[in-house]
Image (cartoon, rainbow, N blue to C red):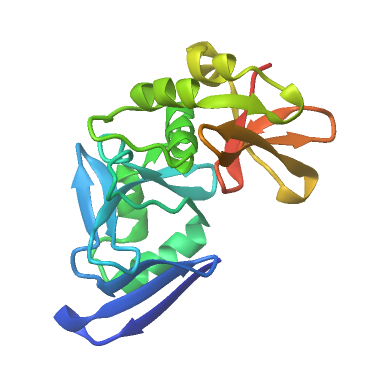
Length: 217
């Protein structure tokens, strides 16, 4: 659930924005909105001084914040998966006080893609690297680090090396009450709640939000 508390006016206007109880921005809102290659982009500080950018994407009536790939694996980059209704995003847009209407601004919002959700999933793993600037580089590291999947429901090599698997998977909205978590174990002693499985055995990426990929397997 999104919650916003506003203080001040005009150029001194500040907001504390939380999502499911976690702070995603606490500070001035004047510079929250920017753009990257024509995409609508937001810059959040997650309650700290460091600013991290997210790109706004849309799937049906949902608005999803996606990490920027070239920054996602930097040590200082912060990211919280956020999935809002268009109505919730509209309220946030109104509070931010930008002149354009939400309808006009949504023209700059691209449709959510499988690659977007793959990026969210890999970023959620916590993998970081000084010279890591792409999902493919991060997946190579995860493939080297991950050594076991709960109940051996899938081979890690398939997850991280078969690019067609995720490309051909379907974007869906998952009811968290109908699935359970599948853990992937990483060297040396890390546990990553990487997958979800429903009662029929279907597997999904655990993107830490309702919008995800149903694996094509």
